[in-house]
Amino acid sequence: MASSLSFEDPIFSSFAFYATVVILKMMVMSLLTARVRLSKGIFANAEDGKLHKDPKVTTTHPEVERVRRCHQNDIENIVPFVLLGILYVLTGPDPWWAVLRFRVFAASRILHTICYLTPIPQPSRALMFGIGLSINVQMAVSVLRAM
Amino acid sequence: MASSLSFEDPIFSSFAFYATVVILKMMVMSLLTARVRLSKGIFANAEDGKLHKDPKVTTTHPEVERVRRCHQNDIENIVPFVLLGILYVLTGPDPWWAVLRFRVFAASRILHTICYLTPIPQPSRALMFGIGLSINVQMAVSVLRAM
Amino acid sequence: MASSLSFEDPIFSSFAFYATVVILKMMVMSLLTARVRLSKGIFANAEDGKLHKDPKVTTTHPEVERVRRCHQNDIENIVPFVLLGILYVLTGPDPWWAVLRFRVFAASRILHTICYLTPIPQPSRALMFGIGLSINVQMAVSVLRAM
Image (cartoon, rainbow over all chains, first blue to last red; front, side, top):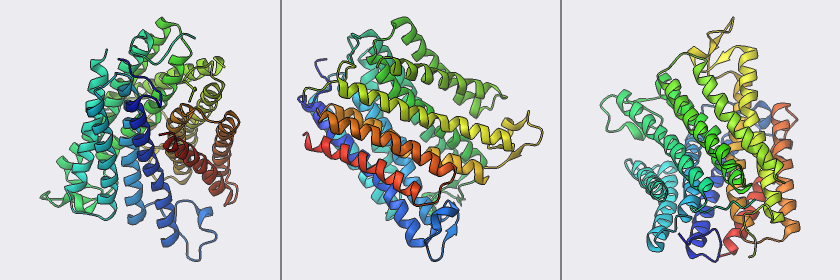
């Protein structure tokens, strides 16, 4: 239980790195949504399309909605990872397992996005989702056992 | 102001427990959504239904959307609870009140989900939502007063 | 690298203040959604409108959806701000730049909401979104450079 939230702690330092990577990845989804909206002329608000030559106001365009579902899935999984991760680091976990979990989670979420947007045939995406969820559950169990 | 983020601190330890419980509860919503999707054959992406015998691609199925609204309400309330909770623990709150707030919040969100999915008649769900929101506001005020 | 998560640290104290302000702002969106729903009689669940004299069950009402998109945009940007902010404070940043970033972020998100709901003509809202995103990216880069 000697761990603390300090960049001098190698477990925290590793967590901070991978947490930042997945948060950046999540924020990239906003830019991807904007890119699809602008290239297709699909806007959710009437005032957004004013400068576009052929704007359509709809919230049901399949391509835009796919990117948004991918973003939503990130919120549903990456935010819990960062929140649980802070608590997990403070339990003083085994460094080898901790860093492995952070790396596998980050890889699974990057691959999840690639699977979602390409799209690579299922069950690739479901598998990547499951791996990320499993890491979150493992960290949650570690926190509950630290009581 | 002696509190710190350490499992040796009983307030933090209690927070870590209830925060993990509500994050797990929030993540269970993903699995509930998947279960409703698979049992009804309702998919948001064409590639997801390939192995189902009678897949329908729609994002407006009432039962699926109810589970998703419940999940979204969790994101809108549980994520602020965990973020504000970290700051609140660091203000060195009264232990009795702090632990009571964590417990009431966790109970209100579990009951909120039960009210939403059963569904138990309103205003049960509105009340559970209000209790959770009130705890979040109380913690926010404590943080602002700690300046 | 001397910073720590303590209200005795002026950078953390400033972060805790602005993080709480933007989380409160985000939670106000729930109440704004409820107010528009009740005033227009627009409900997402059949059981919610029982006490309203003229309830309509729909999830596509333009005014309700506008408030909800504004709330969703907050989730997509304010949650990353608070998560990255905790890591950023721990890098021991320059106090002047750190406090400036927290203030500019908070101002940009409050103005973003005003632009979205008034609505003030674009590109005001896009600019406010971009400023907030830019602060998040700056904090993320600082964290990655602290490794």
